[in-house]
Image (cartoon, rainbow, N blue to C red; front, side, top):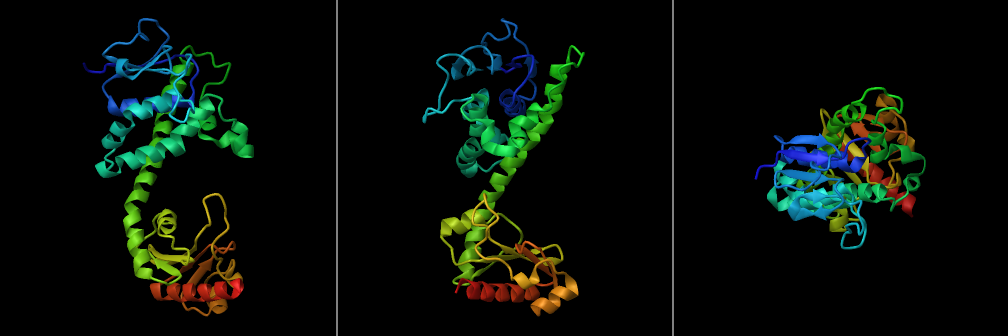
Length: 309
């Protein structure tokens, strides 16, 4: 039977049912999204999907709540929110609808579940304290989406629903952008692997354009590569390689003498005609040609070797 209603609870909203709604409205665009606690509406039926309300989890009956006891758990016994349940059941269909290549769907489904869905599940269930984010706790996605709820003294009788539907396109953009980036990393993998092979023992990795490369470097155990160069518009860039996503520390920094310099001052300091810019933090430099950026890269490699001695 055709799905005609997507049913979640009325009143205040949280990230889990908001993000679940993004997935379901993409898959069932002709269905009506209903926010209610009406008993008849939250009773399972073949024409509806019920989530974050209803007091039961039964995928066959198309009801995906997590508030009941016992609550649904992952294989590792971490708790699901409605978002995790919806993603587990409909996520692969969603990725297919977003034109993710079939061969990449399982890997991207797992990555998105681990890095995006699971934190939402844990926070929603109180299994992770927002305080783990420290001063940035108010900047987590659940907090940001929660900030879109109406203020307490909004007199409109439709304030909650209005805020929910206004928040949906924002939540949709976060999901789509995250998946687009994960899919892009999958596409980049083979390109970076080929560039690593072409680089051989060189400490400089040349890429045909800016693209994600850290995961491919790690997978290839290419620890000898210190810098990455690639074209960007009419210029070329020279980039350091961060040790991880959680630090600004790099495998090697650009020369200290270049820090914060531009144009003629940088040309003089580096001895490279065409050098245009070096960030004060020494993680990126720019030149006006491939020859110039490769010359800068060779100098950076030599200085890094001297520093390491």
